[in-house]
Image (cartoon, rainbow, N blue to C red; front, side, top):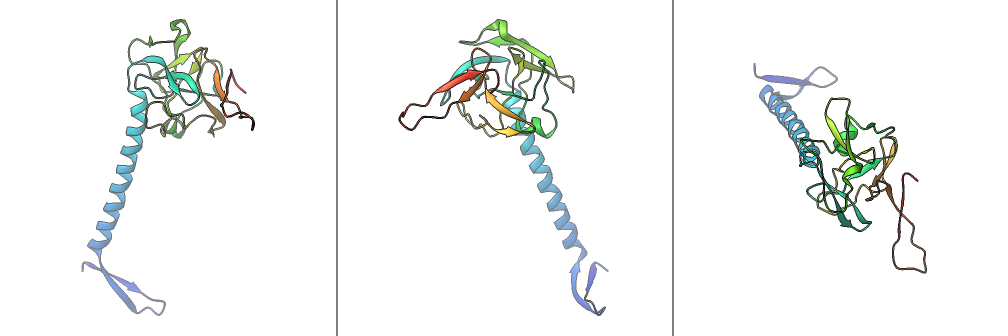
Length: 187
């Protein structure tokens, strides 16, 4: 009774599998899905659950805004009028830098440019010069800028300068070995 018949085209029994084997496989598949969901959530939370300090940090792009853990903060070209356009799966890859208590300006950051905006879910996201700030899930260490220049979720992502502008990595001329960086609100 605990076996399921596998029949071939002629209707003959080709193999018998215990029903418990199928139950075990379904349970393992469900558990792997839950583990994947928890890992993705912890990556997203790691960029958002720091205190609300915005500082300048050194990166290969030069000095850019970073969170309290030294992770690069990004702006999204699709955001308009100080409102975030990144939610759902976008926010899993680009976790919003959420406000928990008072926002403080670290070294090199103008406190007058800091602010916040209400997200669609009611949480408050930290802004700089009215640009909502985000982390990037693939920046695992302080100073990484893996999100710079990426095109995802309908817009381009940029690290943010101390002036509150997008850091645009300029192409390096073939005669120069020093990389240059220019700043603009959006390219």
